[in-house]
Length: 319
Ligand code: 173
Image 1 (spheres, protein in one colour):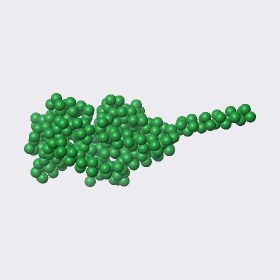
Image 2 (cartoon, protein in one colour):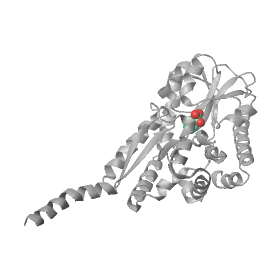
Image 3 (tube, helix red, strand yellow):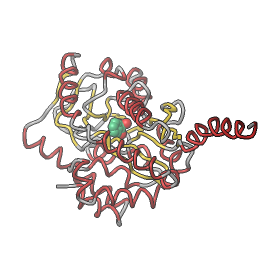
Image 4 (cartoon, helix red, strand yellow):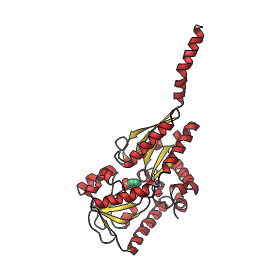
């Protein structure tokens, strides 16, 4: 009797412990500052994953660039210091130049899943950065040049512009002098007059208070801002099947929200106008040539940096 009781007690105590042992815990960082809207969207997504993943998969948000500096996030994922990052490829070109080519995509993330681009990206990301590319969570979003000095043609001679790898070749082709910084350093650089402008998407100026220090936005925009979830490949491969299936499904679900950006971006442009940011634009032919130049310079740089994969990426990412 005594023995039976002991066995029963042990079973009740042990079962939940065993179940908990099956639960996978992953750590996620953001390469963007914590007050940027991308982080709110991602922590909302994490909450959903954790709700649906009880006993299977739980994700913890570790923090933004204060936890891991923006340009070190890629390496932290590659080496497994963290499991997942929400980042743009431009922040981890130190691992592979191909990372920055996702900005050149003219086909949506949904189309990339169908036309072989997603497989190609995963092949390259695995080979060069030990990463699994989970999902693209920003799409349909142009980048713009923002300036504090009026220009009447696309010539940035004499202007110092804050960049990341996204804008480097294009702005240099427009004769800018350039300076690379993480987003977290842009406000101070503007305030101190260290820069005359910067590259950034159409959205999220207000999250960082840059509207206070920004006079003009140059239209049209160019490229297609990319922000994605990337994961340490060893960690991904080692996931229990149930956890991996759930993660894949939830990441796809997040990516499928990308239509959201269309209306959000329209509203952000309106907010900028209301905040007094004026639009600089050129005649139709100059505008066309400006966007064409961005694309030509972008692909030329991507192909030069990656003679093998650059052309393959161009084939599946452009129209
Ligand atoms: O920091 C940047 O300007 C940048 O490269 C970027 C890329 C994607 C989304 C937002 C910013």
